[in-house]
Amino acid sequence: MVSHLLSVGKGKLKVILITCALLLCYEVQAQSFKGIITGGANACQIDGDKLSGFHKPGYMLGLGVERSIYKRWSVLLGIEFMEKGSRTSPKDSVLYFKWKMQYIDIPLVLSFEAHQRFRFQLGITPSLLVNEKIDVGNGYQTPAFKDDLLNVLIAPAVEFFPMDNVSLVMRYQYSLVRFNSQVSNTTPKFHNLITVGLRFYFGGKNTEQ
Image (tube, rainbow, N blue to C red; front, side, top):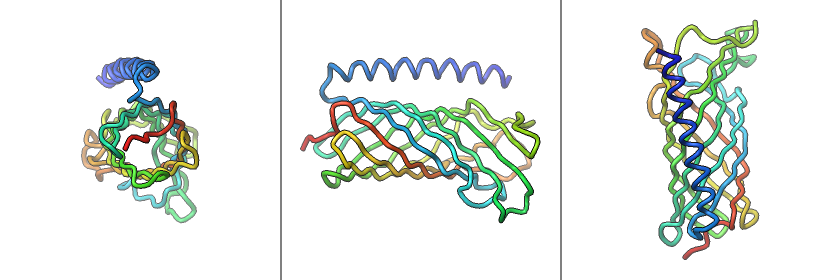
């Protein structure tokens, strides 16, 4: 059953990748669309795992498109490879623990240009689990339990443009629903992470007034 769900998830991923590639190609011909490439790092924790602090580092790589919809407003749609999870620190009672979860995120973001160099954003992010490993001191192993294939997160962000086609992004994400609903008799768990990234726009950022 799990292998079937993962194969379905991989099939959906192929469709998403093809769709995003087509949208990026269409951007060349449609002036209202702009292509986006994003790279960054995550500081992660999991609420409910009895560990504290954003001690788990992770990566973020993404592609997307942006479309201006009205004056200072625009919409962004993307696909991102995200590493989430948690790990112990010297303050935790657990001797050693690392939890690495890799997701394909599909952020849908509403963006408002408050200033020529600043934008505020609010997004909703469906998140598809593709891999999960736990290390308790003997190397990463596949856990005995299976977490939910799909999670959904809320994602407010701030974006600063030092140049017209390059921005610095700081984003906070939190799960709207628990990601371990299939695991019985356990504490609900939620992703909690901060992302700092560098974003490149093809054709420059929106300037429509």
